[in-house]
Image 1 (spheres, rainbow, N blue to C red):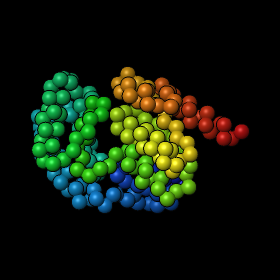
Image 2: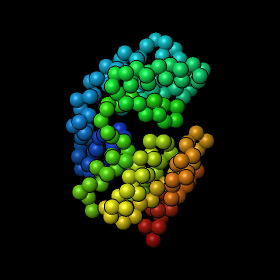
Image 3: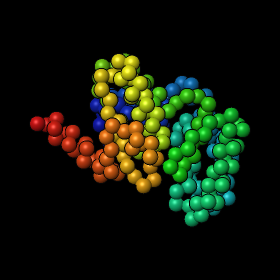
Image 4: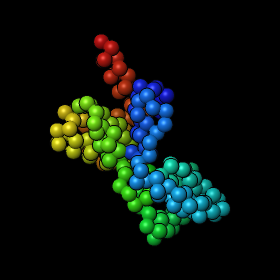
Length: 197
């Protein structure tokens, strides 16, 4: 977030929205009931063994992310993550995989695509651009295509950020591909300079 009050924000993969001019984000009501259960799962999973393997748990409000990037033994850390995924599924929770991260979510549909659709609903936006670099961003890419097909958007630009760790699908499904964060900065600079002229 860049702390500009005239900008609306989507967070937590579309589960939270902070509208322009608001001071408080709103969580999807369906997810509110699951928050306690997700956090209880996280407390049980947060063992000394997991910490020893340098698996980091990130609290994302309605879901948890288990990161093993930086673990000295990636293979052992991944085995621990696989065990957490199995426990989550046995508890009726959903699992989503990203680049060296496992997300444990409630069994309620929310993803970046659903978040984009909800975010744009009721607005007069006709053109949208989305920049993504991970598997979870593909949902947003596909939703933008769907919104154009349905006539809810006139145009959508799906920008893929190429990286060594990113999935190849990002590059394959993108309308435009840039290299890393620097490529995103260059693209935004071009858009701003074009608008100023």
